[in-house]
Image (tube, rainbow, N blue to C red; front, side, top):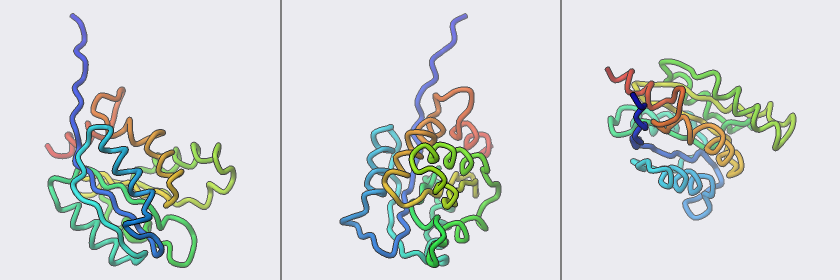
Length: 173
């Protein structure tokens, strides 16, 4: 009996840019992520830009976590070590489960681009209320690396041996 080819199932995604300096007109990282997820066949459910403030970040992300049309949230910015970088502190308390391997793999891939400076990235991921969240550095290069090196496959229902689409479907049951 021949194996059937898996069918692509689009996810609903939300994109959040965390920045004290970016605007809707110059948010190249957010623009890249929106284009990449759309080109992959996913649906953009929401997009926002917020100042780097723990409670402002947490408010938007919490709203999306509660929205059943949002399967995944991709956050860009606020993952470094500057005084205002607070994305990990904002989102990690919301996690039901952490995805430790995401940050580890992102930094491994990033090493080829920026060398040991990758240790300054606090990229992280986790699940909250059947929604998967990814927090990436704010540079367009980092977003491109994360999308092409990890997220495009892990958000694709056809990727084998496993992907986050399958995990999200299991969590909903």
